Image (cartoon, each protein chain N blue to C red):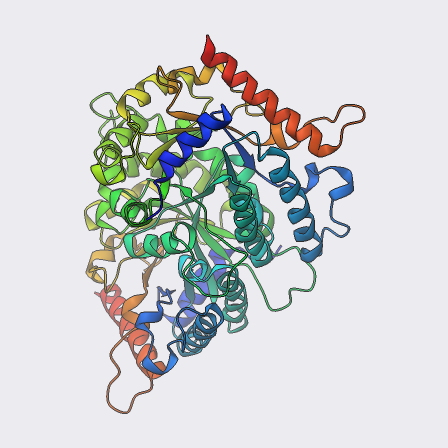
Length: 304
Length: 304
């Protein structure tokens, strides 16, 4: 088994001095003009645009960010051709030295979750797929309960991979279910965190820095509950989406980090992928600058 | 816009006298010996087996069941080639006159759910894909809240399609989250049902028989909460997985049906797909017999 995902993640964050994640959310309408598909009703044309844009982003950010997060919905949007692009771009990202999170939010009854775990998390077990790879970690949905999560954890134990369980998401509607108060006064998110923690701290998932291979998704926008969730999941890396376009600031993520500046990665997608270019800048320069600005912002917050 | 999914569903159930759904869960290891892939490490070989088996099942059950449910995990298992098979077999099922539910359990923040809705629920909007189709309805996950569900409902309003929201799943672990008691004494499933009901009964989603295009997934194994959920979602068709291999009986589904025998479809996968063949029977004969037996069992329960 290769080194645990969590240990590789912490090492890469520290070598790049950037606890950030760039979200790969390819939205054709937002692409730089020159990269938009010639014919948006032709799926091949769309997928060509997808490859060109994502590959350009990966090269632009590879030296700055330790990890990228592929939102698979924007690939599934282009059917099987899009799914092929997903696996091939995951492979390309890994070849550039990036760690990769697949934002797939899967979860189903046990036997079905096993199929999802084999498809999305385990190393691909087919021959002759040299240009395709599965991610180092994926996001998963806890609504179906712990037996739905177990098949993914088994892959973490067997192959050193990682998961980020949705605990508190970044969208406004997350309050509808995740903020519901349970009989003992905890919110549902807090209850989910407490239910996950014995697994998150289990010996088989723990790395060498006090963090383990089971992380949690906690929206950077959810500052009011960050501290409470941090205490309940002390060994989980928090993946914090919502920085930038969704409105979260560096300051709002402070409570997710420990005193060494570890324990969290702040994720941004649209604000890094689709910045306004300055005069004389290529679109890739602009993406690189946006990623550097974000890394500097988080670094600055952690210094104070 | 074509006729609403829910109206077509009720019509087909009554013409076939069978409120059942056959789940298409293609698991290679369970296939009839002659259909297993020659080389299980070769993805093309696996996908060929997938097509042969699923197509054989569709032809065997087309006259018996009104609706089939494709579990996409077992297609994603074979990467993009499996996803192509999914869309093409959905097309084949529709051509055989079957209604199709895609069991995809998607759900994400609003902008991402829009991409999922376009990929999985809306009619495919690319040219030159004559042999592929999207389902008539899909399953969705409510953990992210109502803004995550809205993009799917928009497709229901625009195109007459359907959704089944996970309310209470059939697996043992469903109790971990869905059975949690909230402050007012409702379980989380009950609270989710109550939150969904104003949407489920909204005029734009309602069909002509008192049921609407927003259904609910309620495990047939969850008899203890069936009646309560039925009252809370009076206009939602219940999709009831868990009959057969997972242990639910026809009797356990009774409370999901109204006095006219409407309002629910009982779903079985493994018990119909992988029956023991009797002497002289082909594997397709055995599948057909298993589907007929199941239809007869539910029909018998509703008569008493």
